[in-house]
Length: 212
Image (tube, rainbow, N blue to C red; front, top):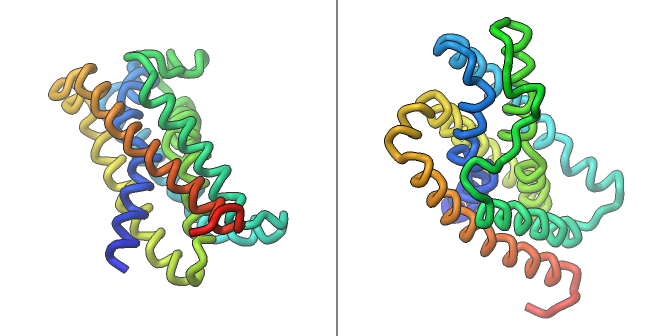
């Protein structure tokens, strides 16, 4: 059980990539003071947590409703993770996109909520990659209760890590520098690429296309 938990936690952290969110967070909150940034972080983490919790509860039902086999979702998830890993490995410093209308936010409560929900909570924190992780592990073949009991603390810990990293994002950027964050993202991308290939292999095995 411990091995499964740490595998899930590591996967969630890799796909969520809170360190990679730091430059984008600093860009979209550049015109906010420190107190406003704290409020935005709290709202973003809460919004992302609500989205992930809802998906954790109904994700399996969605898969059953549309008749999607777990093996097929493993393959599609592996492809998606590989694309995310590819972007992490081959992106250049400062090339990750920020929606132009959010790049210069106004100093208002409504604008703060808007930035917290989009693009910070969705899709930067609770993006399609992390939703895919939830579906994949929920349909891993073990009981739903078992998967839920492992996924829930893994998601909460990952959100807590994201909160701490964003809260001290300025210090982190000053400590590591843009190049340090750039290098760490490459390393995480390489590891995620390995996970992606393994997920595709698991999907092919589950569908009986290849033998174990």
